[in-house]
Image 1 (tube, rainbow, N blue to C red):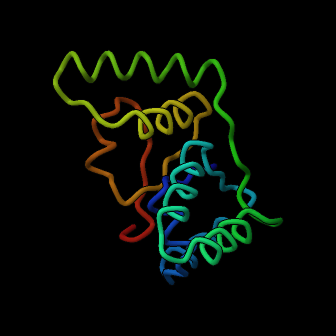
Image 2 (cartoon, rainbow, N blue to C red):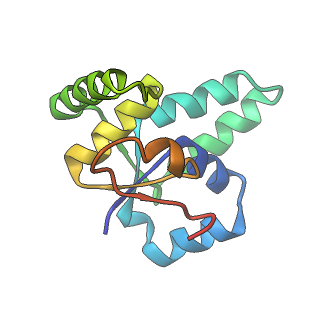
Image 3 (cartoon, one colour):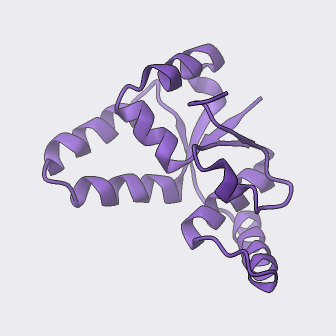
Length: 135
């Protein structure tokens, strides 16, 4: 199985949360990726923090080999984002654009999204979700 990490799970890894780091060790870093929009959220958090340089260094270390592959957005993921946003708006179940971009990437690449926000992402039809804090 291959995984894409949501931003919250990436933060848990950066913070060394034992349950999440143990799961990463079990599945192997080669099976794990991070979506480009999640990386943007990590940088946003670092630049908005009181310890900018130290948080940037932690992100760089996290991404350094052997680190998760950073997945760029492609046309299929962007189209999926547009479809999902329209579908969820139609039924009054909207979620944020960055989360929908991550979901679109996971869906189009057949990846399981690892997140602590499972109820939030349960609105996305067909999305496979795991929570490494509780599963």
